[in-house]
Image (cartoon, rainbow, N blue to C red; front, side):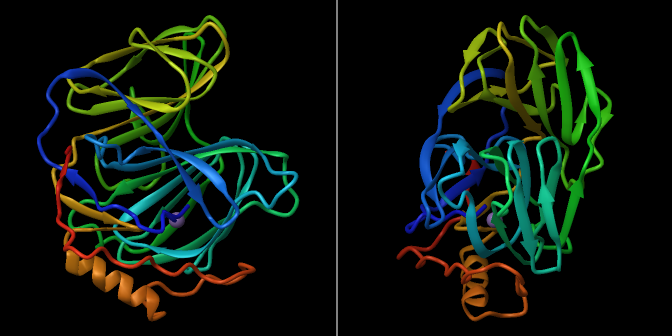
Length: 321
Ligand code: MN
């Protein structure tokens, strides 16, 4: 996934550490991805709340019928300082990157791409595909300046599953209640998909030092007493040891959490960095076709050019506004 806004706003992250439970309903906004009008609902970064742990970007796409059009067509584009985390509810996406990976992902599987100093990738619906495309792409900011990790791509065909009173928990990244994902992670965090069966009533274990948020992907769920439909992210704050979840109909919910991210970051277009100058350098190197990002082979189309930089200097900022 790429941030394809023609004039992306500077997203500012980092800052004061959350210390209490909360209920903040953060509405998403519609953003067009790619030249063929794939609409996504973006809940992170959000006005007033830029990050949840190291999670700094949350796009929910679909469910969309892809039989008439091309489905997803995100041309080669670069990333720095982050990991992309792709998870599908329905359909398939073909990933290609500049370190030679080519991987089809299906529902229940996980793709994690670590950009580190720099990588490029494309994402598209394969020619032979299921009709419906539905999923999420999340970004995780890398700590310690963000660029020390070597570029990497990992596909996890199976993930550990926890069953709690009518709720199937698939741990995508990090650890929930002692069930740990094998996915590469660079800061204490968790990402998990909750599949709620009708009339599920369960309590999930949380860590008081993490902050958490939940978002419904399908159906309607009740989380800590809040009825949650798709479209908004419910920020839950921290200082919690348990999370009540229930549903009267089948529902799917994504749970994100992590240690509040202490570093200030600059997020612009597809780059996470620590300063304006790092962003300018990354943009210049992408536009010049420098070795830093390599080349994506096999995508039928041109690479994406970076949008123009804003007229003012980008400032590193805290995780809340
Ligand atoms: Mn991308």
